[in-house]
Structure formats: structure tokens, C-alpha cells
Image 1 (cartoon, helix red, strand yellow):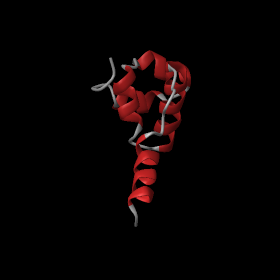
Image 2: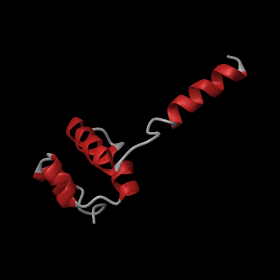
Image 3: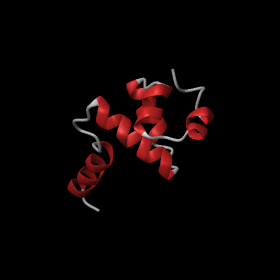
Image 4: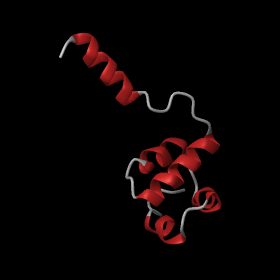
Length: 72
């Protein structure tokens, strides 16, 4: 694989969220949590989300209760 293709692939992996608002981040985190995706934890800690925000966006109580150590 050439250098150019490596750069394109690397850039695509690391630039998934270019312009992400807080409300979009909460919605994406809830969607990821409901799907069982562990990437949601990085979004939650990056934006400093609270349990109340995540519950209001539609996450189940059990999921939020299980993550209480990373939530504010």
C-alpha cells in the first residue's frame, strides 16, 4: 500500500466527528450505548455528559446505572 492510501485511511479513521455539537454528541452516545458500542464512553468523557442528559436523550436506566463511575 502506498503512502497516499495509508494517509487517506488513517485520516478517515481519526476524523469521524469533525464538527459535533453537544446535542448531537448526546444523541450519538445514546445510540452507541443502546447498540452496545464501547466507543460511547469516549464521547461521554470528552463532553463531560451527565446521567440526566443521557437519560433524557433516551438511554435506559440500567445502562446509565452501569456507567455511574464515568458519569458526573
